[in-house]
Length: 109
Image 1 (cartoon, helix red, strand yellow):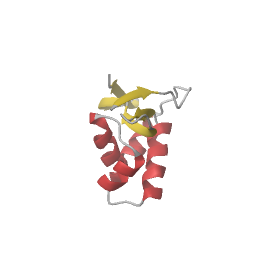
Image 2 (cartoon, rainbow, N blue to C red):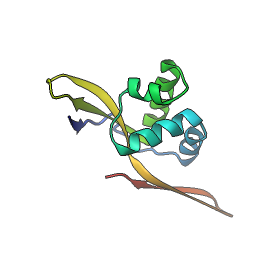
Image 3 (cartoon, rainbow, N blue to C red):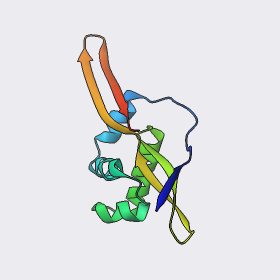
């Protein structure tokens, strides 16, 4: 099995408050952890959460929009392919001071 990344979002408007809100959801965190070790399909992610497939798709969309997840194509040995998702970050640092909250991300390679 091999994977090939495809771009899903052109803009780079990562909003720290949106990212923190997304990470406040247990299902979104489970998806992010599951995809940190390689691409997973929505079906695989649904099996790893205690959520419905509709909820998983909503969380996937939230993670895509906040640039914490990216869409890729996973090619199988038999030639078929499917959409999969993988984490784009491996770390998150939150700094709070008198000027506000600063969120910095360490991108996954």
